[in-house]
Length: 418
Image (tube, rainbow, N blue to C red; front, top):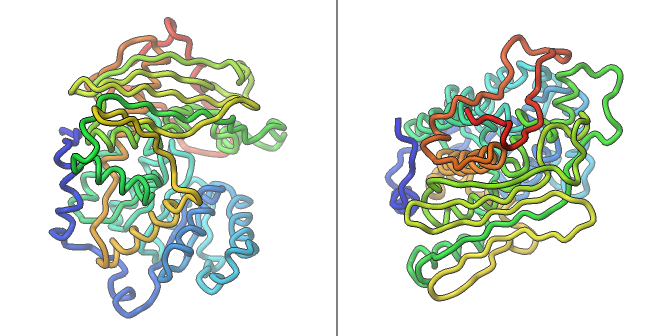
């Protein structure tokens, strides 16, 4: 199966939108003026904020079900939604009865089977391919946080489900919010119309601060698997490392500009700020520098870093044969709300059909390709990463105290690309 996306397919999507015949599981309710029902899987900060953004971005939705691995996460999320000052006008749209609150490792299955029209996926990204596949099989629309997986085997699984979602005409909107930011939409349209000249080079930056979720360490009653999930950003199989989990935003913009993915890359990285050998800081890097090359010879210089009390910048630089432009999010970050507006308009058939599953999956794989180049010290090609047998996801019967051997800290020259 060929998952590659051509420049033509990227640019043709808006023009082809009217040709799609929508599948709307909640069509009768939507047509009758009733609200589309949302189910949230993953009740951490990002999932909770996605509900806020949706309520503020669309007036015709209702939160009907919630699922999380941990009951305290779910109840804390619901409490925030009920107490936040900016959510007081939307309380009548939060209708999560006790029987519609699901916890545990099978909670996602119960929520997907519940009477909801659109599912929000906001768990740690290692679970994303399994959850997305299940939602697509259930014929429900998706808001899918980025990235779309953490290893090649499971991102290919996501890609297979993405193709099914396109065949079923399901709406899929990603959490890559720059794709819904008015500034980026305007600039990309002008660029693709030829107003800015031909692209000569790209620079992508996420130079930020660390994400450390459990600075006080593990509580005595937390088993191994529970600890890893509560400290998920420090565990490779759950987060994918910062180049995948965070820097995807910028790399995705560069792929969007080019209309395709790079064909090869090499890179460096390591841990300087983040101490090695402690379970709080896990087995990921705190800096990457990767050089990507597209099929037409254009290069993307990618740099991400997470240090405390240091210089920061988050943007992209697009160099053409006419200009050199720095792109940053619109002040106030309206893309977070706009992605939900376009999600719901697509579901109702009130706006263009949207399915970002495959394009953002390709950007996820691009990030993994960069990570593997830095880890291994090798030149990694797109064909190599698409054929890779790396599968980081644990196998077995999942439980809070499940034990398994986590990946060792990657050392170039010792680490082996598979």
